[in-house]
Image (spheres, rainbow, N blue to C red):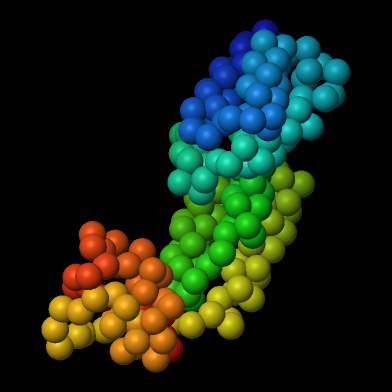
Length: 223
């Protein structure tokens, strides 16, 4: 593969990845403006930054700015999905994909750390979500026998798993309740918890249209 062909391949990967990163909503404010500026600059001058050695840090900054700008786990999942579908042929392009996957996972870790979990069920759902990516990305990186990238991935996935495990331990379980009749949210809160100030949480968790009419089968954290 010629040098030009390899640079072209990197250019295409970077352009697609940053387009996915920029597509999420909520890019207002200084962080969003800086993200658009840095991403545009990196797309325009990828080859130059690869040659001067600043490319990895500039790409990482784009991922960090996306997190600061409010990107969600759902949207970062789309970015990761796009990267897992890349099929680079050159060694340098392969390294770009692998490092981008690690950068994206690291930002998912930051989003998770900033999330206020209500129950162990929420944490368990996040752990299943992350395990799916861990399994996929592990295979991608292991296939190329990239030692440093593989070790970074192992350390990162272990840190995220450990954080979620520690977060889940003190949280209550989400339970399923069967009510004898339809009741207002205030009454349900009194019935389950012995106090009425958790009615808003019950309405939000069960996606109730009107708090005066709670469904008879509902979910709530254990008392």
